[in-house]
Amino acid sequence: MKEKKCILSSLTDRVKKVSFILLSCLVLATLLLLFPQCSKIESKMEYSITMDKPNTHVFNVTFRYEGVNSPSVDCKLPVWTPGYYFITNFPKNIFGFSAENEEGKTLAWEKTDKNTWRIKTENVKTIVVKYCVYAFNQSVADPFLDSGRAFISPAGVCMFVDGQLNHPVTVEVKPYSEWKRISTGLDIVSEKTNTFFASNFDVLYDSPILVGNQGVVTFYVKGIPHHIAMEFPKEFDTAKVAIDYKKIVESTASIMGELPYKHYTFLVMGEGRGGLEHSNSMAVFSNGKAYNPKDERGYKRWLSFIAHEYFHLYNIKRIRPINLGPFDYSKENFTNMLWLSEGGTVYYEYMVLNKAGLLSQSEIFQEFEHGIKNFEDIPGHLFQSATESSIDTWIKFFSRNENTTISYYDKGLALCLLLDLKIRHETNSKKSLDDVMRTLYNKYHIQMGRGFKDDEFRNECENIAGCSLDEIFTYASTLKNIDYPKYFDLAGLSIDTISKEVSECWLGVNSREQGENLIISSVVWNSPAYNAGLSAQDTIIEIDGKAATQLRLKEIINSHKKGDEVKLIIANRTKKGEVKVKLEAKFEKSFKINKKDNPTPQQKELLENWLKEVIL
Image (tube, rainbow, N blue to C red):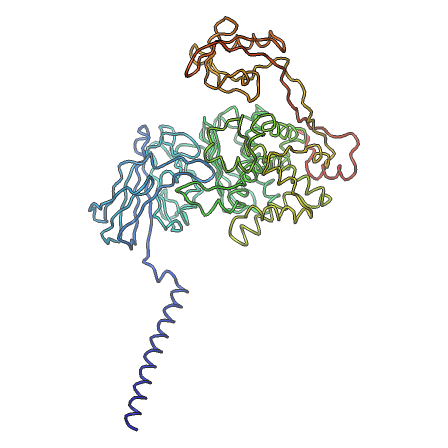
């Protein structure tokens, strides 16, 4: 009996111990769930970027990583930057890489692939990485440093630790001694000088930094500051620019319902090309003529450009195809939907300006005509769909051939125009593409915290329209000819899709003078020149027995008639010889848009609700 009691007592003690251990584990697990930071070593990531000698085009970068907890650390630099769908291979600009511990002892490292530097930490808790970035390519995607300014494109300057993209980071910018201002969409760290904070590396890479002596004008919408940083402020009518930018912001907010940021910065640099959107900023290049309000046509093109990049803060930065985020910065991120993300934004740049009272109905019609002609009048529309163009942009970003490709900007504009007209018609002007955009924003971005799938976009469009939109989505994914008159008629509009002769005789080449040579830059598919065997990069030596020049080529064409034969001496990369080209008439469609004389009440209501009749 006593032995049994001892055994029972021993079992009871064991049960108590096991229960205590289990309870302890449960408590610990609960604490780890409630306070996940308890399970990690506290870490900190800090960048310092200097630019002491701008004429060398070199940024000196120091990256300090505290709280290291692994035998090795992979530092990686992106090979592209979001919004610029092209592999730029930023790592090619890196040199002078080194790593050390907090005391300055050198740590061993090796390059494991084109954008990865692996550091052996020797179990230290803090590593300091130093390297240089050669920044000489001027674009809205590349870092650039010269005597006039520094443009820090963070994806090309700041490495991330593999697996730590969600880690917070601070960036200290040390300007060249003659520069007084830093402009960026990043938040300021108030207790430190020229130091900025990003909640993760996605935010950092989405926030370019302009350093120089730019002027800044600020306006407010809904109490939110909007800063226009202008590299050459004297070239602006700054008061008018601020008024018109404010109209763009207010018009966009009226469509989308809210401004999803605490502050916004327009980075406006000087001579150059291109623009790139960001979540609470944009970076754009231009020249004085483009943003001079005295040049009304050029100024409106400039405002369209600004409206385009601004609307992107919704359409692509927040309303995005699911493949475009979270990003893989080491390779391409493919999607079929750039026709919506980019082409749809072209459509909305005009809608925003119309709602803002900056673009009239007739001016919008002209923009629609131009956009449609851009892809309908080139042979590429016979070979490439809008979805294929979206995928192929990664390999054809700077090498599009109008004979075989189209731009998803142009066809996307047309497709979104058709979607908007159809939705408005089917709902008696009660709904529009605006409702689709707001649904995508609120449902997928705000509520679900993700991008939309291709079929989800189509479903939302059809749910709001209350009907099938199969025809329009077929236009997006195939080469089927678009029935423009059918859709423009919904708004009481006509569009001229009849081919008409626009030139009595036509050769079909674009050329440029290079020194004393006349070089063919492109040949139009199925043109007289194409069918005669001419090719891009051929050199035209003689035209009808006389030395070839641009003026001579123009004179010959203008002095001939359809059916005449022109004799050319051509040199290409393999041979030289005579080519005879029989000139033909050139036919094009104007796609001219006009109001019909007697629209129905429904057509009239749709047009009035769609586009304002702005008196400028």
